[in-house]
Amino acid sequence: MVQRTGVGLNQAARLPERNGLLLSGSLPSLNLDAWLPLLTAADLSGGTAAAAATTPAAPAAVTAPAAATPPTAAPATASFDLRLGSLDVYGKRISNLALRAGADARGWQASMTASEMSGDIGYRSEGRGRLTARLSYFTPPPDAPGARAAAAGGTKDYPAVDLVAERFNYRGKQFGRVEVVAQPEGSNWRIERLASLNPEASLTGKGLWTVGGSGAAATPARTALDFALEVNDAGKYLDRLGSKDTVKGGTAKLSGRLNWNGDPLGLDYPSLSGDLSLQAENGQFLEIEPGIGKLVALMSMQMLPRRIALDFRDVFSKGFAFDRITSSMHIDKGVMRTKDFKMRGPAAEVDIDGETDLARETQNLHVRVVPQLGDTASTVVGLLNPVAGVATMIAQRMFKNPLGQIFAFDYALTGTWTDPKVAKVSGASSQPEGPPPSGPQAPPR
Image 1: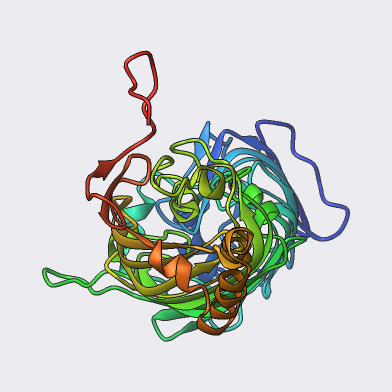
Image 2: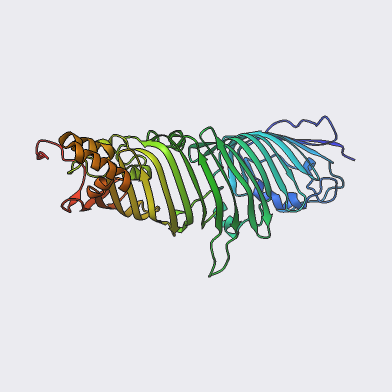
């Protein structure tokens, strides 16, 4: 009876120190997805495992064998010491992988380092399987070639997952620590816990990944997510997400229920639907270059005319400080609508209603700006007439900025996020407004 077996891939074989199989060496690529049906049926304690000891010299790449030949005896355990240029598993491709692993009839345990991840991963085969990962860093691997069509049937082959990554990178953005706990539920995949934690914010959520249908009337796979995001420094959090120098300070809470076609990591804007609620306090929009920050730049109101009867240059273009922002939003197939966006600051109040197309990055909004004249107006009047000044101050307190309401301005905001079009609809003569004129031909205003 064979007790110890060594197999070398592109190198001399080494015997394991204890009874079992040791597979070591290197390969340019390995398609584990093609092997999984065989490995699932195999029993390392004997019976149907492939006879590794009789395996011929490895080719440049390994794919699934045509058939498995039952051996007279199989090793009780297997260990691996491998270096792979690429590994295809569960429809994903992992690159530049070095791993040490051990396996028995109940599952396997591995320590690995790759371009996309580093840490310890374990798998247990009970039920539909359970994958546990504790990683120092993790970037979602790209799809393996041909995996998209194979995965269209849904999540039925996915195991339960318990993953913690200290550093999670997604599309070039660093989200900090991420935790995911998910379980298969019938043919679907239930996300029991999703958490993202970093010094600036914390996000928690739960959801469901629903399998799509098949055939001519197939429905796409769909993800539903309930979440709550709490931000203790909005400026630094937006810096982390790639919108640098758009906001200074500020706290925020964003919660909602969203759903979209596709998997949890593939946010699809044309199909995105749901509801959001936003609250933010005590921050400042910074001076933003056109095209930078996009939706944040839109909220900053810098596209409003800089030279009108009341000069908003210092109010918006140099950085609008806000005391509070509130809004509820409804999204239907990528179009976000709001009727109650309110932004309050020492210099002005801004109300917005209308819609924004998140997929096309366009908007059709009505914006109302009410300058906060406050005690400034009563001071000016008081210099001319003390009695009138006192009356104006009392009116300001009683009626909440009535002079500001008199000088309110309304705008129609259309165009794209990077090239917004502004038309004044009240408060002065209605005409399209763009950036202030420049150059020698610019008339004085």
